[in-house]
Length: 497
Ligand SMILES: [Zn+2]
Image (cartoon, rainbow, N blue to C red; front, side, top):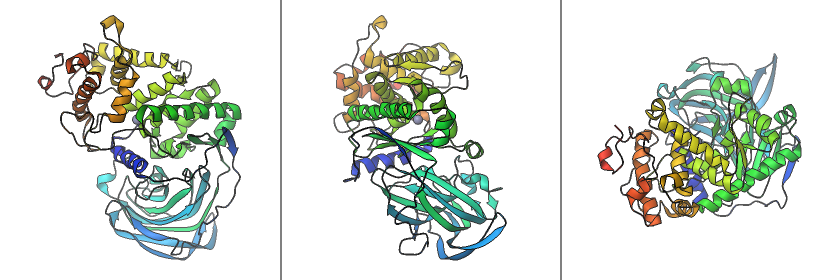
């Protein structure tokens, strides 16, 4: 899953890929599962004083005022004094009190502290956003790019305007592959403009012994020890899972031509109650890709112990290899995240299980059979008027691209091969093959626009293969519904109704 309005963030992540210079990291020759012990982070300034800490503001909002100094904290019936900072803002914004430091790369950390919100108000226009973190902690590893690593603090507010007593926040995250980490105490966040006052005090940062890592040359995951214990996941099973995702990352690099020196990261959340309250989505793409407790528990219970990965891991990693850098056009990356996932599963013969509430019947595919999943979704979509009237279906549409790759002998359609899509991903959006008209990416655009651009992808594939656009359009099966395409006469597809 990828929130529509999250595309911008993914873009920023990808831009960071392309613009980044050198990164400091040590490739690990051998896979390994690492146990972390509680060790205070070197270089973390818990006094919260300048120059190690400073105010910042994002998205052209105003920075909050910051007053560092001793604060009286009352928590659990006792009162004590601690170093802290008071952040205030009278206008809606996304501000922070920030520090940066070099942590041990790819290592789980936990930042803890006491927080008190006073008259915190979220911009009413943004109340509908999910995953709101109106105040709290967050991290990122590139000054130009925000991360989805943050505390989800909406549930700490009684309403849009709330005053609370002191609470303790624990923020678990994984450091970047370079180690360079920016940490924020937030007033506001990327999902909501916020104003009011928030106090932070008694901050600590240490390595997080409640997490383990599995590290490989191109991939690292941080996983909760409690989940591993609950489902009796052995170190070797965990290591094997990491090895599969490491191989998947290598295939994504091969398919897309993106040779990023950073390691792909996955971070598993572990607080079911909090995530239910704050409606944290199943999974997010980014650095790191983040999975909620539902996704994480399922993965360790039903995939890792069965020598498999859960589909979403391949899907989210697939998103992070989005090749659409220039943003001149975009067909929905949900579709191509799955196409790229298919490449990794088939080429590396990875066993994939799909999340379901019916755990007695978990869809399971390995290698080329993973392609059959998309075949069946495409057939189901075409034969089901209720489904196809919805217009957008990411599995069915991915199935069309896989039909191109592998062909369909029963329909007289020759395979175009993965090399076609390799060229498509590596050059398809650059100067080599231009779409017939640009559609600029706007996170507020509907999927209708994505399908307009879908037709342009067929033009590009025609150019790559030296075939006509209508030859390529033949890979789109009869019955594929074009309701979303407002003016079918613009393109020579078979009109369905
Ligand atoms: Zn997605």
